[in-house]
Image (cartoon, rainbow over the protein chains, first blue to last red):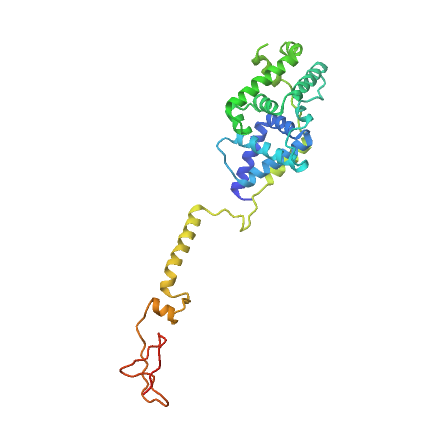
Length: 171
Length: 119
C-alpha cells in the first residue's frame, strides 16, 4: 500500500472513531437498520480512502458522501424511491436495561418517525452529529434559511409530542 | 420547555451501537483499502498533461516543415499547378529516337499538361 493511501485510511479511521455516535445515528437513519448502516459507512469510508481526497471540511464532506451513497442504494433497490423508510428514526439504543430510559427512547423514536424526512435529517445532523447549520445546508444541499426553518419546526413538533416526557427527561 | 433543554434531552439518549465484530471488520477493510494502481487509473499531474499537450502542438506545427509526413496534396495535377505554379522542369533529350519532347521554342513542362511539340 502506498504511503499516501495508508495515511488517508488512518485519517478517515480516526475521523470515524472520533465521530462514531453521530455517524452511526445518521447512517442508521439513512439505511433503516444497523446492518445496512455498517455497510453504508464502510463503503463510504473505503471510497473516500480510494479517492485520496483531502476536503477542507471532512465532517461535512463525509456526511454528504454518506447521504449520496444512501440515496443511490435506495434508488437501486426501488427505482424512483429516494425517500427514507419508516424505520429511519430507530437509531436509538432500545436494548438498554433501564426501563424508564427505554420507554423514553421509544417515545422519542415515535416522535422522530412522525417528522418529515427533511426535518428528521436536520435534527439528526444537528443534535447527534453536532453539525452547524451552515454544514447541514451544505450536506443536504438546501438553503440555510430552509434548514433553520426545518430545525425549528422539527423541535416544535418534538416538544409538542414529548411534552409530558421532557419533564421527566430533564429531571 | 425551551429548545435548549429539549436538545439536551434528545442528545442525552443513547445511540444504538454497531455490532463490535462488524465494526472491527469495517475498520480493517477501511485500513486495507488502497487506490487501485493501474495505468489507466493513474492520476496525471497537471504539469505533465500540459507538457504532453504542448509537445503534441509543437510536433503538429513542425512536422510538415521537416517533411516527416508525405505530402498528399495532389501536386502535379492541372488544378494544383494552376493553384500554385512551380518552376517548370525542362527535359532535354539529346538523342531522340522518335521525337523530341522539347525545343528551345517550346520547352516541355512536366508540371503542366501541355501539347507535345514535335519537329
